[in-house]
Image (cartoon, rainbow, N blue to C red; front, side, top):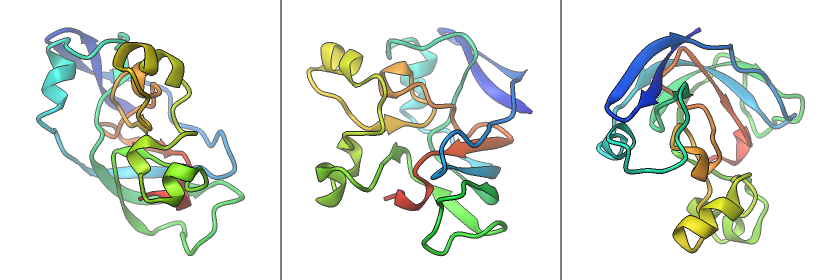
Length: 153
């Protein structure tokens, strides 16, 4: 599939990247129909956010159509549903998520220790926003994997 990828500071390119796969039974795959470019993307473009790697797929604001669901996705989501994906990735189960504090989900950032060293705390995983925020591929692409699909804030 094609995706808008970070190459280096002030250098992005549309590249061919692997299609996303269901990695967890709570995942969904979304065919992207719209994606936004946010002002905070400029921080990535200009190299102000550390832990970007060549080829990282950008985009943390997107919407689309569900084309595949993991076996544990419930709560009324169906293939063909149109969805808006928020930028924080939230598990829905941790104490922060239970209190509605999705941006500090305790389970969605696999690089929480690195983020904590760099920022003093760890945010949730974020689509397309550096490996400090989990290294998740973003939505400036043809498809995206959405972890914890039924837990989106």
